[in-house]
Every structure is written in structure tokens, then in C-alpha cells.
Image (cartoon, rainbow, N blue to C red; front, top):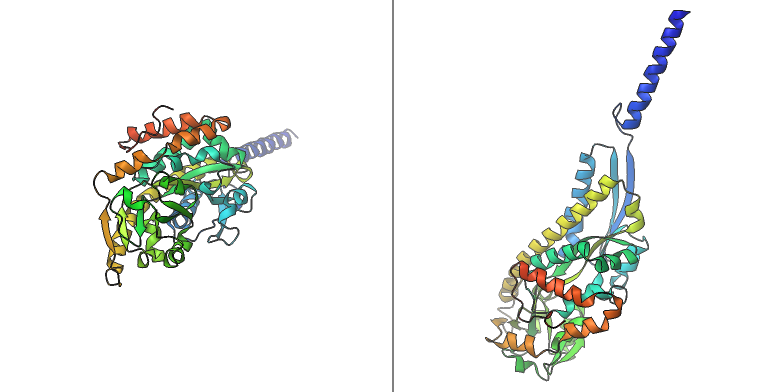
Length: 369
């Protein structure tokens, strides 16, 4: 009888220890937990800020989650190129959970993300998109008002995106700032403000409309990016390329639905945020490489057309004239958004962070704010 009691106690003790080990995850392999996530975009993977979502973000998150050794697994449904939503619904689609992770075109969301538009009103600040994205990532983390704009829309910001520096692509040569006067120039949305003071007329459009608009005389050229002009062959109708370096532009970024993010284990949340920043850094490097290659390809591919492509810099001093003749669009923006948050401080922080990294803005947009 004593033996049976001892046996019972040993068995009970072993069972208790086993339960304890299971609870702490030391006694056996973790039961697998699978998270099913949808990642999507309005644009195709041929654009680097979308392509890297598939080639870098998804596999790197998977690799690191698996390396945790906790039995977590993510099953991704990838839906790029407007399969789930179009360009005008990037913010709401991720915020409402149509996609769990997606690229958000913040430049089209000025009503819901007014303070995030600061880079649009500070042209001629830097042509280095790598530096620009580094600053945008830091500001989205450290400036509460910017962080709140993502949060308010039920989003967790993961990593900034942007485009290479803007130049002029026109039907006739433009060498001086005065040459712009009277010209109709295509520009996307808020970028049209960069023509204020020049005497040029801004014609709203996008990369998909520029070719036809210039060909049919709706406009006489465009302010645009080399990496967008090349695949759309806009150089065929706008063979004069004037390198102005108006500046690279922060346009939004990759984000995750806040409710979905909250359901992830803390260590998986950290991986997602870490890889989001790595995506942004890789994007900056990719954009700089593609920019240089695109300018060369435009010249090469346009060399044999009826009016050969000619790439030339804007005449000395004319870039400065452009930047300094423009009305103070940053001050106007600060005033218009003063009741929405610390708009003046955001412009100051942005310009200061660029200068800290070696940028030499042509115009000090923060002066006098």
C-alpha cells in the first residue's frame, strides 16, 4: 500500500512537471500557429516600391518568423497591381482590412493625412531619395502628430516610399527659368504648385496620361521622374530633358492594418516593423540605381528617333532662380494646416534632419516659420 502511494506521488509529480514544461514551451515542440495575411497594392510589381514588397518583405519576414523556433508561420496571399483596390483607395483598403499589409499612396490622401504632405511643399531640398526616406522613417516614428495620422486611419506605419528627383521633359528646349513662361506643363496634383511664379500653366495628369497629353497639345511637357518617363516612352513626344533636380519626393509607404497587427505576437510585430524599415532602405538604394540607369536608357533609346533625345542641365543659376522666385509654398501650407497640428515644426524638423545628413537645400523653407 505504501508502495502504491509512493508510485501515485511520483506519477502526479511527473505529470505536474510535464504540464509546467509544456506551459513554458520547454518540454516539447511548439504547436504550429498559422497567420493568414493578404498583402496588396494598387500598382504593379514593376515599380520598385511594390516589387520589393514581394521580393524582400514577404520572404524576409517568413525567414525571421521561422527562425524564432516558436511554431509561428505566415501564409501570404499576394495581390498586387490593383487586384483588390485602385490608386484612390490605398489608405482605406488597408485601414478597413481589405488587405492586411499594403502600399499607401499618402500623396493622394491630403484630406486624411494633411501633415504627411510636408515633402511636397519643400522642393529643391534634396535629390537623394535614400536620405529622404531615412528622414521620413525617423519622423514617422518620433513626431507624434505624424504617427497619429497613420494611427487615426487604423494603420501601423512600416516603411517609407518615394520617387527619384524631378526634372523637365518637354517638346521644345528649356534652358532658363524664363523659358517656362506661357508653357503648359503636366504635373501630378500638388506637384503643380512647383510651377507657381514661373508663368507656366500646370496641367493635372499622371504618367499614364502624359504621352497623349503632350502628343495632342494638351500640354507641352511635364515635370516628372526619369524612372517613370522611361517605361512609358514619354521621351518620344518630349525629347528635351532638362535636368533640374527639383528633388526626390516622399509619397507614402507600406503599412499594416492596426487590428491585424495587434493580433500578432510581440516578437512577430517586431520582425514586421524591422523588415519594413529594411524594405524602405533597400528601396532608396534601388531607386538611386534605377534613376541613373533610366537617364542613360532614355538617351540611348531616344537617339534614333526623328527628334533625338537631348539631355542637358538647366543653365547655371537658373535652378536657384526657380527655387527663390516661387512663392513660399511651405509657409502657405503651414498656415493652412496650423489647426491640424504642428505644421511649422514638421517643416523645421524635416529641413534640419536633411541638413544634418549633408543636404544643401537651395531654399531654406523653414526660415521665418
